[in-house]
Amino acid sequence: MIHAHNLRPFAILLLASYAGFGSPARSQAGQVAPGAGAAPTGAAPTGTPRAGAAPQAATAQRPAASRAARPYTLAVKVEDGFINVAVTAVDARLADIAADLATRLRTRVVVGPGLARQRVSVDVVSSPLETTLPWLAPRVLIDYEIRQDARPLPLVIYLLDATEADPPANIVQRGMSQGLLITGHTEDPTDGSAEDALQVSGNQHAMSITAKKQPLGLVAMAIAEVLGLTVDLSDDPAELIEARIEGLPAEDAVTSVSPNLRLHVRVDVTRAERTPIKLVVARPRAR
Image (cartoon, rainbow, N blue to C red; front, side, top):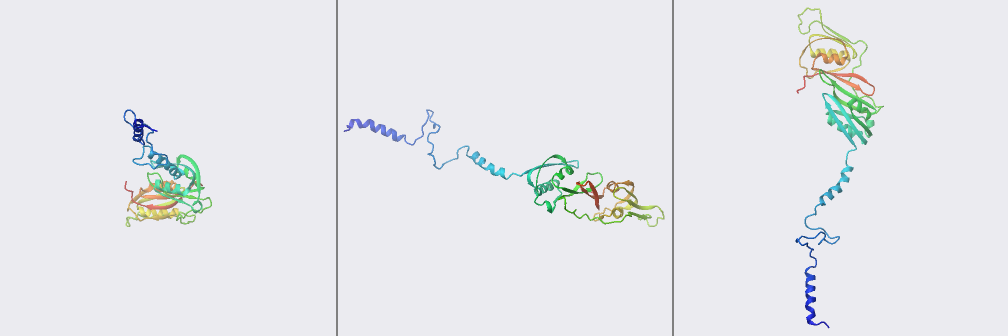
């Protein structure tokens, strides 16, 4: 039997326990104590996410980003016309590296059919373009534009298999006789001078050019005839040429004639061969 005078302490104790049920414990400063009032395990979080949630999400995304990283690095440096290239690759697609190189050099890079699915693993420190490229393909061709007072400009780079044929170069087949002579002053038909107004002779290894106030277009056609090249006269600046050049390599002889005359040369990097393929008459590029 419980007497009435014993119930009051029991009721006060029960009421105090009920008032404290589910309330977070507080320190003397009135702050919630660490760990007090935490949600039960498995309960859905509510309110503002705790600090640290965002970094956890970022950490979860890092493996996916790593998987998407490119399997190669490419560095291109162009300074005073000199091109240096560094490449490190681990089982990377040659076509991807070629496309990246084309973008950085602002030129065409062609991968031959035999290497369309080729993968490469290389580690080449920064080196001249013609030193780096043979690490990527068995055969390398580069078509350059050669002009006066400028470094050679790569127009097209070909990365080929060892057995692939050379791309067309528009070279005209010629015999052993290579020379052209125009007598008289073509700019003055009444001039009775017997001097040779335009004379071009030689080959790509040693060429001689004599011109006395001759139109650049006419001089270009004479050079193209001797070297067996096609000539582009679509942008002829109507310049008169005075020149006397003796026994220079074709690349030096042609660029000595005029800054408006350009020679396209194909360089077989693998075989160390240089072949003139086209002559272009063009006005100076705007700077």
